[in-house]
Length: 320
Figure 1 (cartoon, rainbow, N blue to C red):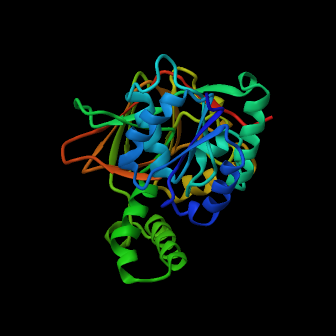
Figure 2 (cartoon, rainbow, N blue to C red):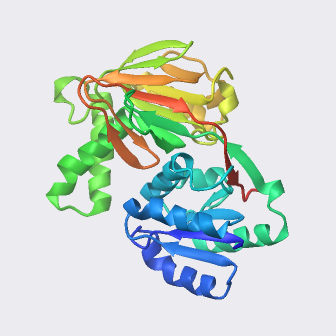
């Protein structure tokens, strides 16, 4: 039995520089089983093969799309008899939110070394349970799984950047700067003159009521930390999905920023700022779009985005 199964995607941006060192490290440690995929479509085959070596820990080394595909297949694929091994995520994606929540930060190779040291000693004290977000359109389709979802202005800003700004052929940093400026112009100018203004949506939280309007930021997560070190216990503990919504109002966005800077966001209560928890969240509107662990999803016309929590999944925490 391998101590660690390492699933890598060489095509992820972070791996282009670090993967040669990872391969060298793996070659020096025969108790690491390394499987490389060239595309996320190969993840099911990879996990089927990995299951045969019965690893003590599964480590995902890839971008946000690779992590999402692996978590989805791990949960739905049934490749591991009984419970799957604890999952560790190297800090190699664009957002790295899952890795950060599990205590992995900085250099992916150093994180891998730390994981190996933990596994060689005793895994059990580092195993934590996390629920995932299951995203679907409410129909009989296989949900996509993740741990952090962003919507409203954040999602529409990324779509604006991809569809309107990137085709201009500008450097990435300038494209991103233009997108951020467009978001804030939409906040301060408003109306039809705004280059980018979030579309109105309706958000239904089971047993918690409804929110409707335009939102500067919408966030749903199962992570222990939400945003800017805000702890999840600030909201009512009646559900597994934690939601934060900031309405598209200048005063609300400003007060949210000030409270976040001073670490008071989880205790804040003011108009336009919403913290809720529930076991089902529906997002409806004119083709609403969201980002789940760095990947864009857009509902078809007349369809809602439906979020529900999964049963707990074991993860490996590197936090002391």
